[in-house]
Length: 453
Image (cartoon, rainbow, N blue to C red; front, side, top):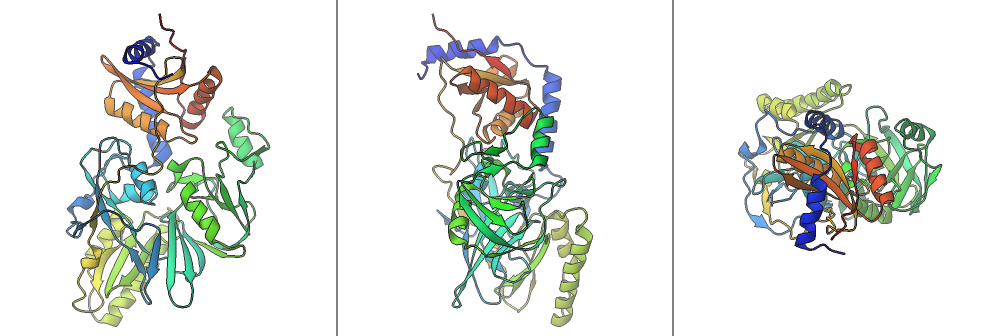
């Protein structure tokens, strides 16, 4: 039953009667939560990409390629940069998913932009240009540094690369590097829970079964490719907001729509090479580009020296001095965008680095949709916050949990309440309370259905 305006007022009034959570503790928990979950900049002191002279878009288009690119012989840079103007209610994770990007990429490219509550009308960059990893171009190559998978298809006449963002392992359980291969594939896989993961969940009060059958609770999603290194997979996910983050137990996660394409395009025995290359150089149309990502602590110095050695060799061969100030600026800012740093041949220009403007789509693919409020449903009070933006941010984070937990913000005199729901019965509501506690360390409070009359 969809509620009437009068019933909605009754429902909201009932929600307001719940005892408020302590404001200070809730706010501190929210701040810690944002840092812990995403480790991404909400604001940054560095120069914003909007100020770059090569950022201004050349022209406007309705669509842009995001996954499939031809690779010209002797060239290393694919794709194009783009910009889009945000609309009210957009989040960067929704924009990222629609355009085939990870949260890491869109956040790094747009320092200073709020991930969850960006301003309507703001223009942001879509970093849809990539320098290919410095590896043989065959099979599947995954670069952990930019959290991106590249699948090479060579039919002897032309080389095409399909590329998708990935979620990778955490610092505690990193994704291994090195050569592997696909040994088997499975549609609608069953997840056999590793003992170490079961123990982690047990410590949080979440008892996992020995195996999880296909369905919305299965973290492997609908498709899985099993690698020759035992225990590691490339698979889908029921947590799409984790794509582009260090969030897995070592496996590689893809958006559901991307893993389906990869699954269909990848034969068993396909070679897989996993590398960690935070600094990439490549050329296109006579221009040398540098792309920098924030490196893992233990690999940064060594990887930087490798790239500097390559750049010194190019400098020596061309008998022309590189702009090392610009090189170091790109490396320090680490925005994950190919930046032109040198003309390999005179008169090549830098127009290829310019962005194009993309029209905002009518609907963002995969964006969580909130169900209608219902009078006879259960709800959960997640937080009571004084700051409206904090409340909107928390509601957005909850909405992007996997499987989704719908959440809204309701204003109340001098505070804002984040309410999750509706849930059809108390069992569903209690499960939401449990997940909020385990996933986000939020102490939810049950709200019983409102009775009219």
